[in-house]
Image (cartoon, rainbow, N blue to C red; front, side, top):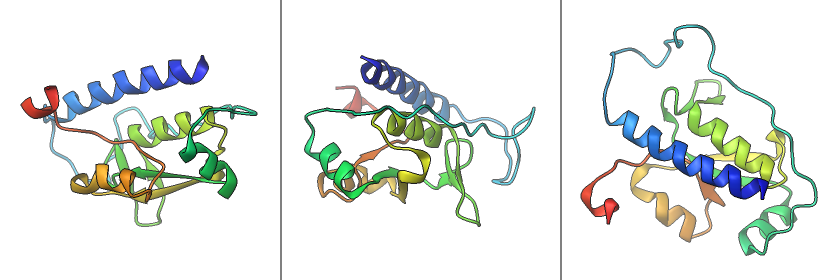
Length: 142
């Protein structure tokens, strides 16, 4: 039940994030900090004994880590700094879902995935799942 709630919340939030990123906003640089402080990066309670009938999850459990695809060039969403540290909304959602699936932050391997190969990366097994923004267009609305 907890995983369903997180997945549903993540879906809604990702849809809202995709809408918000299409709206534009103030100009800035990748090094800018949000007004009010640092970008949040939290520790999440890791689920124990997760049993879901998923070959992808079973493979990740066997290897002891989960591979998550994300963007690396969108500050405050999916960003990787010059030292390799990832931050942003998408990264936090990815860590929340990973925790619900039984993986701690040190068991996550992020892989940068360009927008044009998101679905291919998943279907070829290069990532276990992808978290990132999608532009809303007429074709995707169908």
